[in-house]
Length: 144
Image (cartoon, rainbow, N blue to C red; front, side):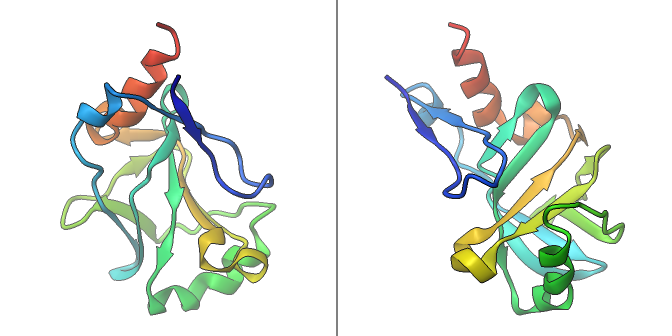
């Protein structure tokens, strides 16, 4: 039986990632960098997601530069407001285009650093399946 990994806090949306033997044969996860303007504010493996919706999500690991927007992310965690200068890319690669924007959800005051998550909503380019083959494979396995 596959195992399910979900975020530790019930306030986060649930995007289970089903892990089984076939999923472990896929390439290792990529590392993504999150930038505000040209400055790296954090990293993520974007280990979760919802392929049909084009959503990729994962734990956000901040750099010291994240403090420039952390208060904003905490204040707007329940009522998301876009930060247009925010972008995500594979480390050293081109920005990922998202039709629904990028959201950092920060519950670190209550949960510590493990309580910060990032969501890419509506990944359009590069194609979702190229960036997140694990999520696509796990989603397909649900239907046999």
